[in-house]
Length: 187
Image (cartoon, rainbow, N blue to C red; front, side):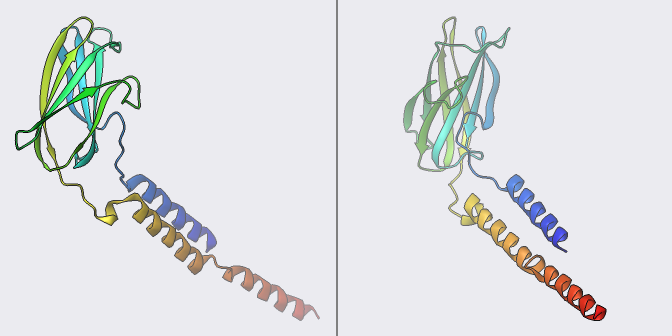
Protein backbone atom coordinates (compact mmCIF):
# COMPACT_ATOMS: atom_id res chain seq x y z
CA UNK A 1 0.00 0.00 0.00
CA UNK A 2 2.87 2.38 0.73
CA UNK A 3 4.31 1.73 -2.74
CA UNK A 4 0.97 2.70 -4.25
CA UNK A 5 0.84 5.88 -2.18
CA UNK A 6 4.39 6.81 -3.23
CA UNK A 7 3.59 6.11 -6.88
CA UNK A 8 0.48 8.29 -6.69
CA UNK A 9 2.39 11.09 -4.93
CA UNK A 10 5.19 10.98 -7.52
CA UNK A 11 2.68 10.99 -10.36
CA UNK A 12 0.89 14.01 -8.91
CA UNK A 13 4.22 15.80 -8.48
CA UNK A 14 5.25 15.12 -12.05
CA UNK A 15 1.88 16.26 -13.37
CA UNK A 16 2.10 19.49 -11.37
CA UNK A 17 5.66 20.20 -12.49
CA UNK A 18 4.87 19.66 -16.16
CA UNK A 19 1.48 21.37 -16.40
CA UNK A 20 1.69 24.45 -14.22
CA UNK A 21 2.45 27.50 -16.32
CA UNK A 22 4.07 30.55 -14.83
CA UNK A 23 5.09 33.58 -16.84
CA UNK A 24 8.74 33.61 -17.68
CA UNK A 25 10.43 36.87 -18.49
CA UNK A 26 13.45 35.99 -20.53
CA UNK A 27 14.68 36.14 -24.07
CA UNK A 28 12.42 34.03 -26.16
CA UNK A 29 8.70 33.49 -25.82
CA UNK A 30 6.28 33.68 -28.73
CA UNK A 31 7.81 34.19 -32.17
CA UNK A 32 6.24 37.30 -33.73
CA UNK A 33 8.52 37.67 -36.76
CA UNK A 34 10.73 34.86 -38.08
CA UNK A 35 13.81 35.30 -40.28
CA UNK A 36 12.76 38.69 -41.66
CA UNK A 37 15.38 39.84 -44.21
CA UNK A 38 17.09 43.20 -43.78
CA UNK A 39 20.06 43.46 -46.14
CA UNK A 40 22.48 40.63 -45.28
CA UNK A 41 20.65 40.01 -41.97
CA UNK A 42 17.76 37.92 -40.69
CA UNK A 43 15.70 39.28 -37.82
CA UNK A 44 13.61 37.10 -35.50
CA UNK A 45 11.44 38.80 -32.86
CA UNK A 46 10.01 37.18 -29.72
CA UNK A 47 7.62 38.54 -27.09
CA UNK A 48 6.86 37.34 -23.59
CA UNK A 49 4.86 36.59 -21.54
CA UNK A 50 2.78 34.19 -23.60
CA UNK A 51 0.06 35.24 -24.08
CA UNK A 52 1.11 38.88 -24.08
CA UNK A 53 -0.53 40.56 -21.06
CA UNK A 54 -0.54 43.92 -19.35
CA UNK A 55 2.35 44.51 -17.00
CA UNK A 56 6.01 43.81 -17.71
CA UNK A 57 6.66 42.88 -21.35
CA UNK A 58 9.87 41.58 -22.96
CA UNK A 59 10.59 42.04 -26.67
CA UNK A 60 13.70 40.13 -27.76
CA UNK A 61 15.45 40.33 -31.10
CA UNK A 62 17.78 37.73 -32.61
CA UNK A 63 19.90 39.37 -35.33
CA UNK A 64 21.88 36.99 -37.55
CA UNK A 65 23.76 37.04 -40.85
CA UNK A 66 21.50 35.39 -43.40
CA UNK A 67 24.15 33.23 -45.04
CA UNK A 68 26.11 31.98 -42.00
CA UNK A 69 23.57 32.38 -39.14
CA UNK A 70 26.35 34.20 -37.25
CA UNK A 71 25.12 36.55 -34.50
CA UNK A 72 25.51 40.23 -35.44
CA UNK A 73 27.30 42.42 -32.90
CA UNK A 74 27.29 46.19 -32.77
CA UNK A 75 23.75 46.80 -33.96
CA UNK A 76 21.55 49.64 -32.79
CA UNK A 77 17.90 48.66 -32.47
CA UNK A 78 15.02 50.92 -31.47
CA UNK A 79 11.49 49.74 -30.67
CA UNK A 80 8.51 52.03 -31.09
CA UNK A 81 5.26 50.84 -29.51
CA UNK A 82 2.00 52.36 -30.74
CA UNK A 83 -0.89 51.96 -28.29
CA UNK A 84 -4.52 51.47 -29.41
CA UNK A 85 -5.22 55.12 -28.56
CA UNK A 86 -2.39 56.26 -30.88
CA UNK A 87 0.11 57.12 -28.15
CA UNK A 88 3.70 56.06 -28.80
CA UNK A 89 6.64 55.06 -26.66
CA UNK A 90 10.19 54.39 -27.80
CA UNK A 91 12.61 51.93 -26.19
CA UNK A 92 16.23 50.99 -26.87
CA UNK A 93 16.68 47.28 -27.60
CA UNK A 94 20.08 46.35 -26.16
CA UNK A 95 22.24 43.41 -25.22
CA UNK A 96 22.49 44.77 -21.66
CA UNK A 97 18.76 44.17 -21.13
CA UNK A 98 18.94 40.61 -22.50
CA UNK A 99 19.37 37.65 -20.18
CA UNK A 100 20.91 35.70 -23.08
CA UNK A 101 23.66 37.79 -24.69
CA UNK A 102 22.89 36.35 -28.14
CA UNK A 103 19.77 38.53 -28.13
CA UNK A 104 18.98 42.21 -28.00
CA UNK A 105 16.05 42.97 -25.67
CA UNK A 106 13.78 45.67 -24.32
CA UNK A 107 11.69 45.39 -21.15
CA UNK A 108 8.87 47.82 -20.50
CA UNK A 109 5.38 48.01 -19.03
CA UNK A 110 2.08 48.02 -20.89
CA UNK A 111 -0.79 49.30 -18.77
CA UNK A 112 -3.87 48.78 -20.94
CA UNK A 113 -5.06 45.81 -23.01
CA UNK A 114 -5.67 46.17 -26.74
CA UNK A 115 -4.06 45.74 -30.14
CA UNK A 116 -0.59 47.30 -30.23
CA UNK A 117 1.70 48.06 -33.16
CA UNK A 118 5.41 47.30 -32.71
CA UNK A 119 7.98 48.90 -35.04
CA UNK A 120 11.65 47.96 -34.98
CA UNK A 121 14.39 50.03 -36.56
CA UNK A 122 17.52 47.92 -37.01
CA UNK A 123 20.90 49.47 -37.86
CA UNK A 124 23.68 46.92 -38.22
CA UNK A 125 27.29 47.45 -39.34
CA UNK A 126 26.38 46.52 -42.96
CA UNK A 127 22.71 47.49 -43.41
CA UNK A 128 19.67 49.14 -41.90
CA UNK A 129 15.95 48.53 -42.14
CA UNK A 130 12.64 48.39 -40.37
CA UNK A 131 9.98 45.83 -39.62
CA UNK A 132 6.62 45.94 -37.91
CA UNK A 133 4.14 43.57 -36.33
CA UNK A 134 0.90 43.75 -34.42
CA UNK A 135 0.08 41.97 -31.18
CA UNK A 136 -2.95 41.75 -28.92
CA UNK A 137 -2.23 42.49 -25.27
CA UNK A 138 -4.70 40.88 -22.87
CA UNK A 139 -5.53 42.09 -19.39
CA UNK A 140 -3.33 40.27 -16.88
CA UNK A 141 -5.37 37.86 -14.81
CA UNK A 142 -5.04 38.14 -11.07
CA UNK A 143 -6.75 34.79 -10.65
CA UNK A 144 -4.85 32.90 -7.98
CA UNK A 145 -5.45 29.51 -9.63
CA UNK A 146 -3.15 30.56 -12.48
CA UNK A 147 -0.21 31.13 -10.14
CA UNK A 148 2.54 28.60 -9.37
CA UNK A 149 2.22 28.92 -5.59
CA UNK A 150 -1.46 27.93 -5.61
CA UNK A 151 -0.72 24.71 -7.50
CA UNK A 152 2.31 24.08 -5.30
CA UNK A 153 0.09 24.24 -2.20
CA UNK A 154 -2.47 21.92 -3.84
CA UNK A 155 0.29 19.43 -4.71
CA UNK A 156 1.76 19.54 -1.22
CA UNK A 157 -1.69 19.04 0.32
CA UNK A 158 -2.31 16.06 -1.99
CA UNK A 159 0.97 14.44 -0.96
CA UNK A 160 0.19 14.97 2.74
CA UNK A 161 -3.32 13.53 2.39
CA UNK A 162 -2.05 10.51 0.46
CA UNK A 163 0.66 9.91 3.04
CA UNK A 164 -1.91 10.21 5.84
CA UNK A 165 -4.28 7.80 4.09
CA UNK A 166 -1.81 5.19 2.90
CA UNK A 167 1.48 5.56 4.67
CA UNK A 168 0.89 6.92 8.15
CA UNK A 169 2.25 3.90 9.97
CA UNK A 170 -0.71 1.53 9.77
CA UNK A 171 1.20 -1.23 8.00
CA UNK A 172 4.08 -1.45 10.50
CA UNK A 173 1.53 -1.74 13.31
CA UNK A 174 -0.01 -4.75 11.55
CA UNK A 175 3.40 -6.37 11.25
CA UNK A 176 3.94 -5.90 14.98
CA UNK A 177 0.53 -7.42 15.69
CA UNK A 178 1.31 -10.41 13.47
CA UNK A 179 4.73 -10.83 15.12
CA UNK A 180 3.12 -10.66 18.59
CA UNK A 181 0.50 -13.29 17.74
CA UNK A 182 3.19 -15.63 16.34
CA UNK A 183 5.30 -15.15 19.45
CA UNK A 184 2.33 -15.94 21.72
CA UNK A 185 1.57 -19.15 19.75
CA UNK A 186 5.11 -20.39 20.29
CA UNK A 187 4.76 -20.16 24.08
